[in-house]
Image (cartoon, rainbow, N blue to C red; front, side, top):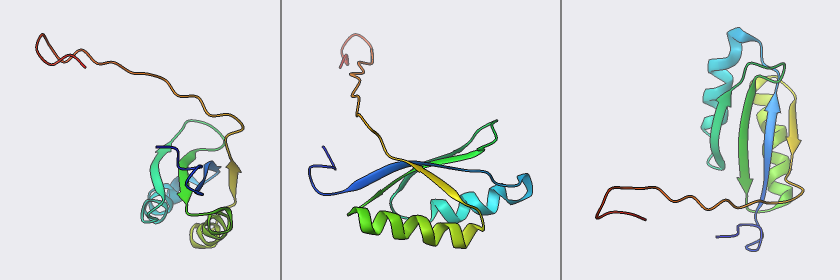
Length: 97
């Protein structure tokens, strides 16, 4: 499914969160319905997540609301180009995809 063709907007987000605030910030971010995944990295920008919303206006508002809720600035990095990779998993002799 191409969410962009349906009018949705999405972005990869990153923020610098103090170590003692990581769990709380991640819980707040994960409570947002449009967050598909959230992960911690060993980097200056140590908390990353993807966000999809029904349109660009809602996406930007959600980011601003999250910034206020977690107390940290969020960098938004929308995809300039989308790549799709075909994945085939060998599920055994009778279950190959």
